[in-house]
Image 1 (cartoon, rainbow, N blue to C red):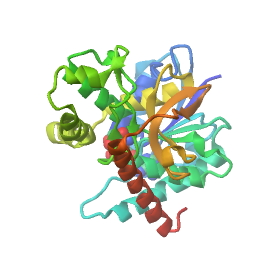
Image 2 (image 1 turned 90 degrees about the horizontal axis):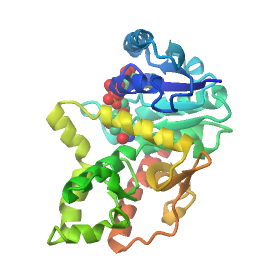
Image 3 (image 1 turned 180 degrees about the horizontal axis):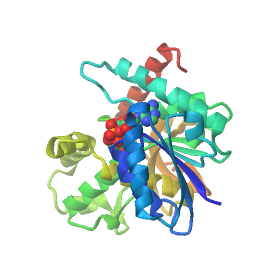
Length: 329
Ligand code: NAX
């Protein structure tokens, strides 16, 4: 049996960076056949159809079938994994409430279509921004699908944080573990260095050997660099993060399906862990065990960390209130 993977916004930039890697087996391994469903809006169909032609030309042996559609019922039919990438970007003069409303109009109906058409084991990775609240909206609209099956991508933020730390310590990125992102995938996110290890020893000790004022470096250099990295990429590249976002989407979804041997970060539904209000989709340190994300519990948050987590969670609460005011939840 092949795995059916639906990619929304498949005609866009991240879609283009995802499709060929998935067809080559980088998401599910080189033994698992895949069927791709590319869901677009009418304006994006041409680009998605072009990508489908190129998928044919790749002659990927794992790729059983490709379907391009603008009908969500067809797009999510039998889908096991849904990568919700397509979203409404913020236009000129658009307020946050307008952005939330526009995306509620996308992710609400997609949540319903997933509930009605997807396979019973469907798992959803939301990439399109505002990712956490879009995941919340989709989950709330998907009657009968457990909310835990809807997640938001914060793996790119974690990867950025690990890479920055590796640079600062002049160490390979593989030596750095346990660096979770807390809260929202936005500028308020909190990349938490306090539990991180380098080759098994505390990163804070390694930093102290190189940097005079480690707390100042963390708050004035490291955290802003990670939180504003998306903006930096736009400034330098003239376009938003694409390949790194696709890579993180693959890593998040692959770890969810195949399991992790240590912590990573994902936006998952809160059951009240660490005081995060129940029902919000917030980023936490997580492990994937038996195909389910589990929040790593019992970590100490000092006053500074608590403040940062609370500030990012407050933003998620505001987004949920704004969406409720629209009558969506
Ligand atoms: P593009 O504008 O290149 O592509 C988006 C595609 O989505 C377009 O082809 C559009 O036609 C399609 N689309 C719009 N509404 C749709 C709908 N209702 N159903 C199906 N398709 C629809 O954007 P791209 O660079 O690919 O980025 C996609 C999303 O990822 C954006 O919302 C972006 O903000 C978000 N990102 C999220 C990241 C994360 O870490 N969570 C990082 C990267 C990226 O910024």
